[in-house]
Image (cartoon, rainbow, N blue to C red; front, side, top):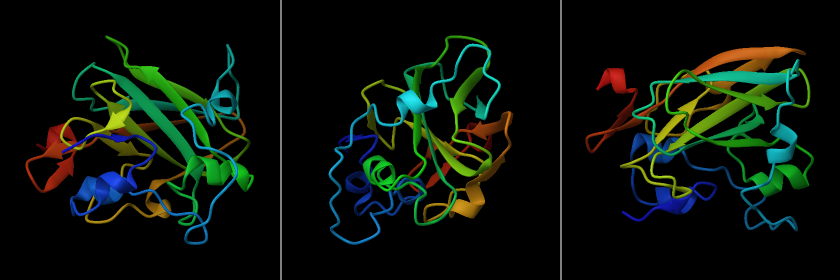
Length: 194
């Protein structure tokens, strides 16, 4: 199985029928075949997500639990918590003036993994986290892990936005995301469940 860029998961999911494959499916733009004039790049949303020293908010302070190991990078993305926009292409969200934030960091070699990401203000958000274990900036189902706010159980389709909803306040909003990894041919779940 070839690896696919993290931001372009639909090509990866074609024909797999696995829980994580469907959970990772990125929603299409509002109209089929729609093109937006902003190109998608790995840097979209990063400047807006960057926390300041002594950050007071509004921001998310997310603890990432259940990592398989301390290899590679963590990529966190924040979306509006509705089914139309959750996991939608970054460039389409930005073009339409909707919330999109991205943070990418190397996995720390020890200690808790806590990521700070600024948000535009109080409200409902959905967050996806990818553990890019081999650091190749591509998602590989057999290698990498995935997690969402509210830690929904991954099934045969991507989680609904409501299942990943995080209500954020004006200050720092804390939450914990538990990572999921492939286990055998047909299941994806937390390591403790293996």
